Image (cartoon, rainbow over all chains, first blue to last red; front, side, top):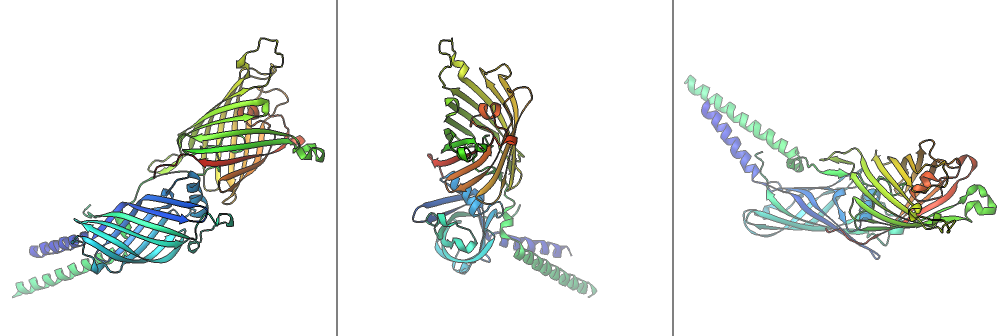
Length: 187
Length: 303
């Protein structure tokens, strides 16, 4: 009976460890966006996005506080939050998806891998599918991840008055770059 | 034999238990959000956009000018609307203030201005002591302090007299205690102390204590309804003077904020609208007026 107990514990511990070795994360992912309109170029960045990648399943999740986006003009930041993103109602941007070719990526082998990412992006209370490719650079167990994709402002029910149609682009380019670390799940 | 049987059944039981635990755990894992593994992120969120600009109407709002931003203000107050069509409801006459505010930091604002009212130059410093926030730091209110100095440059009425420069100077000190209750409603209280070195008559006090109440209701993304009332404690003003009451709207268009309002005050500086308001709402002695604010980013924040 005692042997059995130890066996159980041993199995559980082993199993847990095999799982813990499989998640990478960051709390300081950098997300930038660029709106290039005829009259105005608007750039913004947020260096505090949360990203978790589960190597075992390829699942990828990312969350970012809308209020944390920094602009070069304070007024732009106000308008972004108050008029367009309505961050008091929709405080977060969220991505939930999978790296579909996770089997091609060997986290234990240094190298540059291309990743195909598919998932759902939720912004301003609207969820839309997003498919993009990214790059994973693995070096000594650390993972540098980058990706970029375009989003159509109108897809997310973000109202844009006619007077600013030459100031804010129809399509906004989003770029994500992050250094992911192995998650320590023991605590 | 019996022992072996018992061992076997215990082993089976053990296996099933492990399997069950593994299944349950992996199921739980499946449903758990990956992000929740990072724990709850604690950040401090400061209340923003309690008012559209750093003035409610005449009164300073709890907002300051953002760091590195220059805010040019052009303000007009026309004549009393009870002048009727002959005076085009007051539009024939106007009082003006030109001003510039600059954010040294997100907490410290400086400003200067020139009013046609008694040809006055004014300057101010405004500092946010407390900022309303939730999260890591929890602060229910915003508290700011404002200090202004105004110097009239009217020619002396009797130049032959021994006139002192100090007679033309007045000061106002104000605390601004406010809160953005929700996305729609903000309210503030402004205890104020105006000091005039020289007053016209003995009935007027050199030092005037007043309480300003101001609020705004956001009607939609670009419109808000603003109101303010300044209650002056009794027996401090000359008989013709009264409390300032103003109501208006803020209209925001890109880099501009247009504030259109009706007020019984003429001046756009503290000593004037707090201690020298001469219009009576009950008699239609109300002025139409506007403030136009245009912001320019002079210093971009490091990203």
